[in-house]
Structures are given as C-alpha cells and as structure tokens.
Amino acid sequence: DQQVKQNSPSLSVQEGRISILNCDYTNSMFDYFLWYKKYPAEGPTFLISISSIKDKNEDGRFTVFLNKSAKHLSLHIVPSQPGDSAVYFCAAKDFGNEKLTFGTGTRLTIIP
Amino acid sequence: NAGVTQTPKFQVLKTGQSMTLQCAQDMNHEYMSWYRQDPGMGLRLIHYSVGAGITDQGEVPNGYNVSRSTTEDFPLRLLSAAPSQTSVYFCASRPRTGAGSPLHFGNGTRLTVT
Image 1 (cartoon, rainbow over the protein chains, first blue to last red):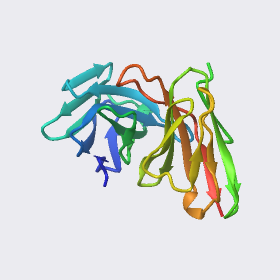
Image 2 (cartoon, each protein chain N blue to C red; image 1 turned 90 degrees about the vertical axis):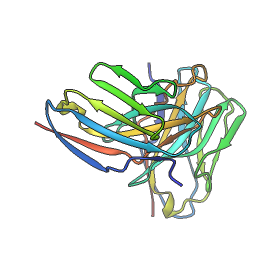
Image 3 (spheres, helix red, strand yellow; image 1 turned 45 degrees about the horizontal axis):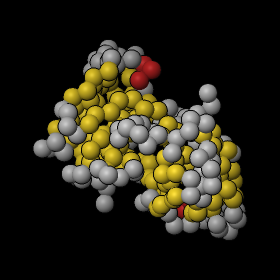
Image 4 (cartoon, rainbow over the protein chains, first blue to last red; image 1 turned 120 degrees about the vertical axis):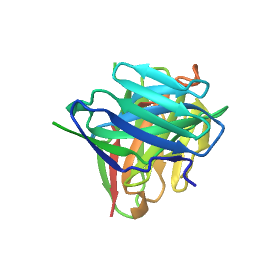
C-alpha cells in the first residue's frame, strides 16, 4: 500500500522554464511533507518542507504547495537550471511518529 | 564536519554470507534509520532508532538486524544474504527536536548478492 505516490517517473523541462513535480498521499495523519533531491552516487539531500497547517512554503527558486483536501503537494522550481537535473523524492511524516515515508521519485532533466 | 558516514561504499556477497553495514554520525542526532533504494520502489524504511538502546522495525525489516549501543553508531546486519537484498542502502539521521527537522543521509552502500 503506497501511501506516498509520485506518478511521473520522469520529467523534461527547458532551462529557464518552470519545473513542477507532483506528489499524492493517502494518509490524513501526515503532518510534515519534505522534498529531497538526489544526484547519482550520492545520498538524498533535503530541499524544502511544509507543515500540514500551511499551504505554501517558499525558499529561493523552490516553492512547495500543499492541497490538503486533494491530498496533493507539488514542488515548483523557477527558473529551472541545469544543476537541477536530479531525482526528486517527496516524503511525509506521520503525526506522533518518527518515520518518514518516501515516494518512488521523479527524474527531472533540464534541457539547456 | 563529516555528517553521516557509511562504510563500505561497495560490497559483493555470496548467497548465505553475513555482513554488517556501518553507519556513524557526528551530529549527536538521536534518530537514525536505514533505507534501501530499489528501482521503481523509492526509499523504503528497514529499521530505525530513536536513541541508544531503542530500535524498531520499518516497512521491510525481514532479513536485517540492528542495534544501537551508542548515539553515534547504527550498524545494519544482514544475517544470511539473499539476491533479493541486492540494493543501495542509505543510513540517515536527524535530531528529535523539531517535528519537521529533515533527515541527513549518508552516501550509500551498494550491495550485490550473487
């Protein structure tokens, strides 16, 4: 039972345009959502997070939107740069629980 | 600052062999965890620990053991390796303060079981 889903395995975007990565979840008890970025042969690195009591969080070129009624979150990258080419994982934390549940990842390729 | 250090980086085992994947962190994080990454499956939690002497199972614990005798170290033991355990293993840690505090990951151990 996949509680966190990333339905797009890959996405290609022109440099300078907006990249939008999507994530859906099923567990209403998730209280924090996080995005991680992963380059080959490296561990995932934290990008941005959002609490379930908010609907938007911004950090530089990265913005995460949360739609609780739809159980959907998205990561916007504007403008996209070649260094953004990586695999992006969304993750969710259960309320009162230490564990993080990850999605299957989306490979983003930025085309110069 | 080393962060989370995993050793070895690569390992090849024969079916039935045992081994220990090492993980150490120097950030005094109470929470530590092990994930495996497989194609199309994302990162799946194997075991985790909220402090020295305390461990618990994640989604896919079968075939793996852990212990936490110190805050810094969280080794993962494969008791009798199977081809299904071929994967990339990541150790991660975070402080327990701050509900949304992010995990810090090591660079992984790539394990092949033949």
